Structure formats: C-alpha cells, structure tokens
Length: 249
Ligand code: DGL
Image (cartoon, rainbow, N blue to C red; front, top):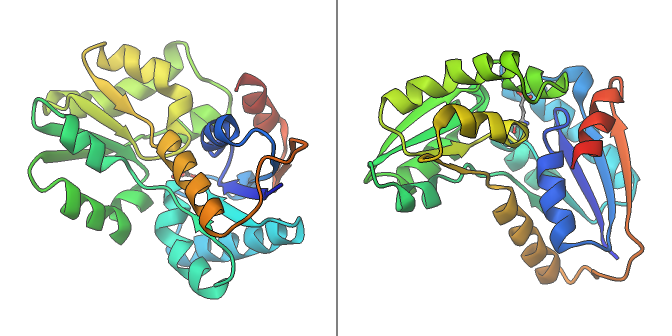
C-alpha cells in the first residue's frame, strides 16, 4: 500500500484527490490544506516555497511515499525547489491542460482560468509556448473563485455573478474551450458551465494528473492496491471548510 501525501492552499486539492481515489482506491491518503495561508494566488514564490517545505516535512512525517502538489500555484512556485531539496521523493505537479485544449478548439481560441501566480510562472509560460503556438490563448484570473469554494458557496447568485465576471471576458474573445488552471475551480464547474453555455468545453486536468500519479508509483515500484483505504484530513486553519467540501465528493 502506498501512502500518498496531497497538499493545496485549501480544499481545492480535493478535486485531484477525488480522481486519484478512483484509480487508487486501496491506498492510504494524507491531505493537508494550508488554509491559514490561503489564497496562494498573490503570494510571492519565496513565501509559497517556505510553506511547501513545511508541508512536505509534515507529510513525510506521516509516512508519505509520494507527494501530489494538488495546487497549480504551488507547482509553479515551488515544485522545482522541492524536487531539488528532496531528491528521493517523487513529486507530482499540476499542469494547466493547454495541450488538449489547443488540440480540441474549433474557434482557435482557448481560455485559461488560473491564479495570477500560475499565469506568471515559467512552467505555464513554457507549456503555453510549447503546445499552444498555433492557437490564440486568452487568460483570466478566476477572481474570487478560491474564496467562494473555501466558504462553501458552490452555486447560487453570488457564485454565478463572481464566475460571470471572470468567464465573460474569455467568451467575448471567442474561447470555445476553458482550461481550469486552479484546483479549486472544478468545484465551481456546474456554475462555470451554466455561465459559459453548453457549447463551451471545460477541461479539468485532475484525471490526467491521477493517471500520471499511477505511472510514477509504478516506475518507483511503490506497492499499490493492498489496502485498506484510509484518509487523514489536516489543515493549518479551521477544518470546517475542508470537511464540508470532502463531504461533497
Ligand atoms: N488551488 C490553488 C491552485 O491550484 C491555489 C489557489 C490559491 O490559493 O490562490 O492554484
């Protein structure tokens, strides 16, 4: 049985956990929500690197064999640092799904929703340069999305107007595919779909990240599937938001 450590600035990483557990239902999971320091979106890379080190030490103390950085912003700011400082530990990062979006667009315009930290990061800029050179990429920060999810507001008028403010500019520029580049955003997917309309495809990268995790576990010959399944939920701040989102998945 593998012990899989997962972390995010808050509850968003549970959108990755819910895909992992479909493929790996018999492992031990340890989830850490850094909600006392959420959101990460506007924090400096140095700040996020410090948090990522602290959380990595915590998860290793819990016996993690592998760590899933279930946060695009933390991946952008800290995964290179983590890989160089903990060379023996496999780290899985998030990658905005620019490649499938670029392959799938019919309008030739793809929209990326992410935090400011992710959109500024070299990882995203490299991915965009590599896979989206033939299409137009339009970007927008999901302003207020993380706060909605952390407060458990996943539908209703407030969620809809917040989502509309960030999604409409992408639609107006012709995007027919929206990439969710922040792990909190999939919890708002029904609202995003409603605002965008049925003709717009929305891509959550979490299933691809879960498949990649299985491949990395195999390549490190970390035993899987022996069970029993378990999950521990930890947070640096109050735990009610984490438990509320966990109950929904
Ligand atoms: N869930 C996050 C991400 O994937 C972080 C959002 C934030 O804390 O700003 O980027």
